[in-house]
Image 1 (cartoon, rainbow, N blue to C red):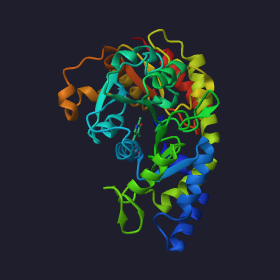
Image 2: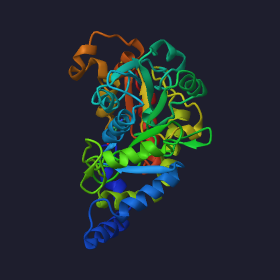
Image 3: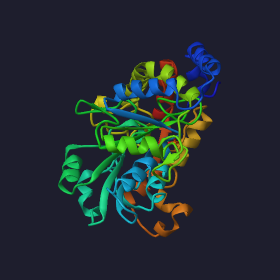
Image 4: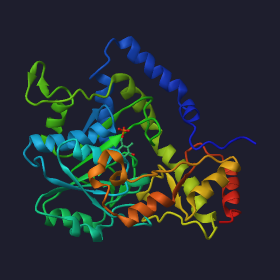
Amino acid sequence: MDVIKFLDLQKINAQYSKELKEAANRVIDSGWYVLGKELEAFERNYASFCGTNSTLGVANGLDALRLIFKAYIELGVMQKGDEVIVPANTFIASVLAISDNGLIPVFAEPDAKTFNLDSSKLEAAITKKTKAILTVHLYGQISIDQRMMEICNEYNLKLIEDAAQSHGAQWNGKVSGAIGDAAGHSFYPAKNLGALGDAGAVTTNDEPLANTIAALRNYGSHKKYENRYQGLNSRLDELQAAFLNVKLKHLQGDIAGRRKVAKYYLEHITNPSILLPEVVHNKGHVWHLFVIRTANRDKLQEYLYQHGIQTLIHYPVPPHKQRAYRSFNHMSFPIAEQIHKEVLSLPVSNLEDMEVIKRIVLIINNYDN
Ligand SMILES: *Cc1c(COP(=O)(O)O)cnc(C)c1O
């Protein structure tokens, strides 16, 4: 029996192999490899996809988030020592982007059913030093609701989206990356919109912020050899931009394929020891990951492995329990910690053969906890 892979990137990119090779040839032959026409085209295309005035290509998703905070500091909107609220159950990059800028991450609990920030718990985390909420659209579902928007208005907080997993998800007629004040996107190969290497972007309608990031990603320079800020080298190169222009054209089809798999899982997994993810509304979810919960997670993972099904855990250890954040290790966020103990990600992509998905569901439904 063949092993059912968690995600087959080779097959995913093979679908677009001809177009990707043409794009690579175009860049190789152009003689221009950084900050050129391919990036300009991708920035226009992705801004139009998200519905924002600006998109700035950067080196990766972590840098996209780091640069947003760095730019707010340069603009005087935030200063070192200010606090940023972030979910306690996220990928470490969300937290690194905050602490790397000398800002203080303040963890808030998620809702155990959607895995996203619980807006009813946000006010308790706000102090005089709070300047922003970095909300994470985890697993591909929009994490913003009306209450969160009201809280940001009331307390004058910037709302920043970690949109690394949610390309194309929608809320209230707006697309992921166009809902808050600014958003960081990742095009890491395994993301729904994946490059063939590292890449990321910031989207925003805030013009001063966009101009500052445009300089910060390029040594802090608006004009060659004139440096306004102490910037970084964080650029999205022409080759990756060319690949992303190809893959962006196929993103809606990819999302449709993922939704089909997720719908099947949601309708057919009936094992009472398994908790399915709660969908707030269909357009709001693009199913970067299909994440279930179960009390004996490691046992279920081993059982599925024995039956030839690869699964992954996103993520086994919460940021506040990592050695990198030793000063937070004593803190307790019971909901986030329970999520990290119980989650398991099932295979999902636009390539899935529905017969294989049916087999996965049958095996899961036969699992005896
Ligand atoms: C992938 C990811 C990032 C970081 O993106 P990179 O491109 O890998 O730097 C940030 N936040 C979340 C939630 C992610 O999943």
